[in-house]
Image 1 (cartoon, one colour):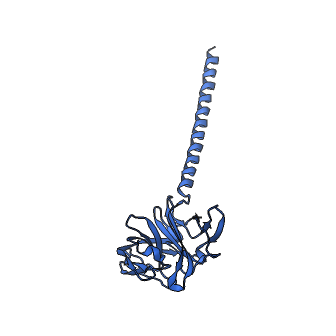
Image 2: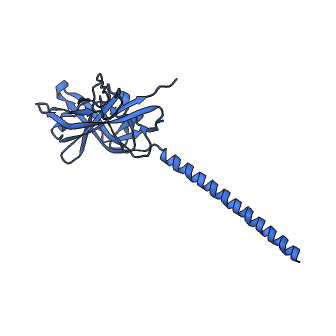
Image 3: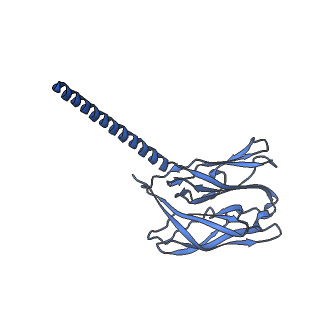
Length: 261
């Protein structure tokens, strides 16, 4: 009888040991799955369209030419650095039917900056294009951005600061023109060889009006701890909105990809 009791105790102990191992394996598997899920969430590309504006207007300064100006403000709301170069803007009529679509290649020169955003950073998009049809009845625009996660081992990104930034408005018989200026500063110890600069302009109530960029043929390079003047005026702001401009927000980065063999 005593031997049977000992044998029973041994079987029970072995069962508990195996159960403990099973629990440990399940716990380990669960933890591994949780870690993978957390990593996937952290590496997910997420952006948000913070604001958008469009204007269908006649530019009297160039022979009453009809223009479609589109502006948006994009923010990286994820936890990883992303590239926002792949975007599409769709113009819709009152019934939600598509009138036309435009991308970064729809206009000459730079139409968005910066192209690569760190978490929390803002970028601006600004397109000025010819309408596909005369007098299109555009009632809304849909902004679609397809962000991609950036491999930080292949790109060097440095945010640059703008000191004493301001908006400059020149009113005339056609409404006026505007640009924004400031002192661009490179506080880093690295050369800034590919500066991407965008600026959003706002009215006195902080309503988004549009965005401005470097001209298509202008480039800026900046040495370590150096500064230089910055002026953004492309593609322009519709003349009817120029007089509303009150202040400006700059978003400037140096973005350099390391091309490996």
